[in-house]
Image (tube, protein in one colour):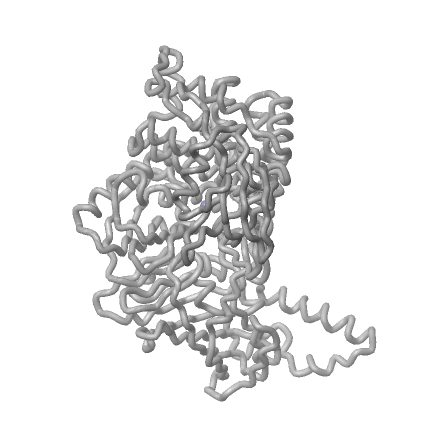
Length: 625
Ligand SMILES: [Zn+2]
């Protein structure tokens, strides 16, 4: 908020107060539109780690250029950019104190779990607290003897009304050989950084450790070069890091091909912050000029271990960071930001994840086909798909995206991930565009980039439809594709779409039965560990989570493995008599075994089918760089 705006804001406050007769006395000492020291609003953070061993940080925030007499509302975020659920970061804060510019203690009112109100200041507030943090992923922070891993909303408090103030931050690095990796703007001092405003600051996670660094230059669209930085904290060898870097370079180039080069990076760099350590929690989170990726698997250069998350998050620098759903703007740090468009923002990004790795030559056609199998299966055979459209499923994100629930949920029957569904929609759209219109999803993404990304004009679903119609010239294609697959509950005909590219879609287990549940051995009993999902053989029997299986066809069950083998040895159409104990009640049911609808995608050449010249060409244009 600039000074004129603040002046107008106070006038608005004063006018209704006097006309309604409410005493405006509280506002009397305000020097309207002026700050005590005449400075513009500014925020400075300093963080240090004397309690490193105990996962603690000491944080000092100096808010200056405040309006004297106005209560400062200091908050801990409840959300993090790129996450769609609430995370309540305030739970790990303690020892909150506030002082004025002279060092006098100020009163604090903790008016709700996330907010501390400070009054009586002189235009400056020094706000201090202790943070506990021990979760290294894309959402939380972790402070330990191996590294300091900071996601900013989980670490730094901020003040309402100061969102536009510039920010400076300095890190008191706990070990002399630890370095700092971040998308924050460099200042010349290697421990101090700058952010133009609060949103950029909160979007700029920071890794402080003895990480392994590789950097390289890429041609940018302004006729110069930009720097890519790959900062990986890992326990592998430099040779594996070199091979990993080569794989990442290939993926970067493949994705630049899609959009015609990199976006304009704010500090002319893009930074991968990566932790491959046994004590982190697997995740990946996109940011404007960086990503934070964590994984417990060791560093590896092959296409199936670590590269998927890297490719996904890198693609987000366009799709979601700059090609931005209007529903996510402005991003709120106080409440959830639900969106209809996550099937596109996350799902189409997921489609490009596997595709980028395939185009980079890091997956074989057979490996790529197996990825498609799992995507198509999840969507075609999902009971949840019949309950919600892809847009409605996107709105489930606040309950699903790293959200926790204390009570049991029914998501196996009601939810289909917008990542998976959107990925399958991306596949169907790409193959439909290629076979019907001789254009591709890459063309569509470039249109979105040109009309909504480069100019950062957030899009709505109406914009997606408009761009699709302009690309194909067919409003009826857009109408039916959206109403069937995005606003409706149908799935595309993957069998015929993939046939054009020389991939066969067939039953994976044509004579097998569909169990759709699982068991485990507990204290010599066979216990249901995953309840039967809707539409599977045992669903109607009422067999439930935690039930004890007693017998099948009169034979007492002994182990989970033998139970599985017995059922898998049956044929679809057979009837099995099952006895089980549900919450103390003995139940006996006859169960009709259903056929297993699981699909698999196989390259023609592995199914003994002919790859014609036309099919080879279609496949090469789609999957080769
Ligand atoms: Zn994502």
